Length: 432
Image 1 (cartoon, rainbow, N blue to C red):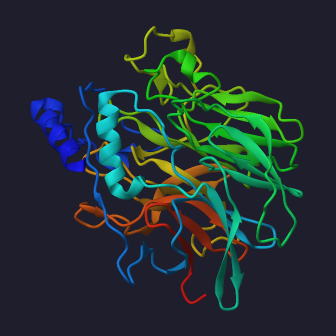
Image 2: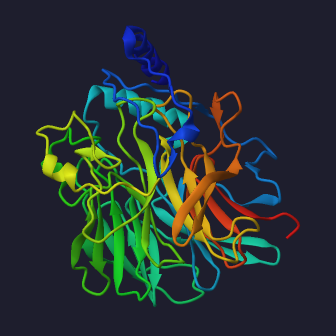
């Protein structure tokens, strides 16, 4: 199937659909990214490396002064890592819901090509618990029979899990290594037969009274109809006790990571922007999320840059679109966000770690790494530093792993879920 997809794709590229990047990626980082003219394609440009497993003894590269170790392997698409108060680590394993329909012929080709990089395969629909011990990391089958889970949060003795179509609650006691209770549905989340962006990021408020859910759009730019976008491309606020919910902020195409910024206490998100208008459009971004704020999707991007493909136009919505705070590059696909405080990795205190799952529709490729963005007075500053790389080979032909969820553990280590390598990595200070 991959060979057929590539043959069809090659024919389309020869027909004039090719589109190499014309902008230095560094110019698309920061509060004022370079934004070229939009292009339109019969088939968007695609470049996807072949997924090849990590070889024996092989691992990602880390910046000077750091070391990396493998703390778990043999997982089924680990997506999120979450550190419990007793230092146990929950690893959420999932992939897209089974039987998800394909909307258009090009979507079929795009899906086949993307899966070849290791993004396909069955997810675990489960959570594994990792427990640090003097001799290594114990591994326990913690929770099963979930439905494409992604976000997870603990409030008191209740564990909240965001499935692809609903927010579930489970009883939890400190130290337990398995939950067998069936769980209860707190509230439904946007799902349905299409469920284009199925991942639901999750974050509890500091006082535990609310939960914030990142819900991605059901399309690229409403090609499935505006009705399919009900309560999507948004951050929902859910009452943790009753399940009552409201739209907290909207116009965020796919808010895949939510966190509280420690200096300001504000809500921040990483967002995957729209595709199919060029290798250099549109930059994915990191932004604070304002209550009642609107961030442009689908009518505009990065403020008031109008997307002419969306009809009918809505100049009233474009006018009120909030410009994101910090671009991180076009098509890098940010999927994990973790803030570091004063006790973070040496040299990486007070900033944001961001995992870049990697591009599939940009030439040359972009992402496939974990970066760190410094914060000052509650805002991102300067240029990102690459903290972890080596997921992609130097010739861009093979990909070993794909970073997704991030978390800081109690000892200042950075945990990384690698959903193509089916591994959890831990980064710490060299010699520590």
